[in-house]
Image 1 (cartoon, rainbow, N blue to C red):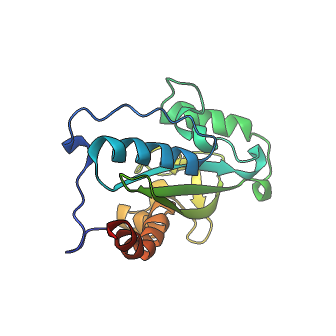
Image 2: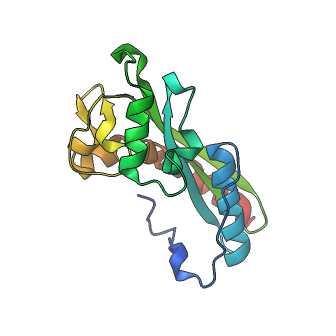
Length: 183
């Protein structure tokens, strides 16, 4: 989504000895910036990094930054979903609102940085639906289409998701950011 004639995207795995970055921030924004700063310092290049997760209203925003390890450090998608459904057992449909959130940070090697955010609202259903996707996709319902993320085609999900919204926001600030850091 970011490729153009003016921007060359190089995946992190093409750089040797990239550090293992510890995400110890308290917000999506802090974690995205921690990752982007560390890799920009290592590579000497402008770096884009993200942090994202699921925020459930009834759980005061949890699992949030702990989405990938909601059921513990060794949790997998199924364990995380099972814990989520257990915590929402008996909660009425109108109190099961949730959103996926993605924050993207862009940082220069000199340390200048900006962040953008994308969110997508929906709700958590009581049982798994669909076979595609990953993470919380089988229990996250888009209330407009009536489909879970797991029931959507990859193209449909990617066109409405929190990550696509964050990328669109990044595309809006990218030219000005690149111009400013190149002087």
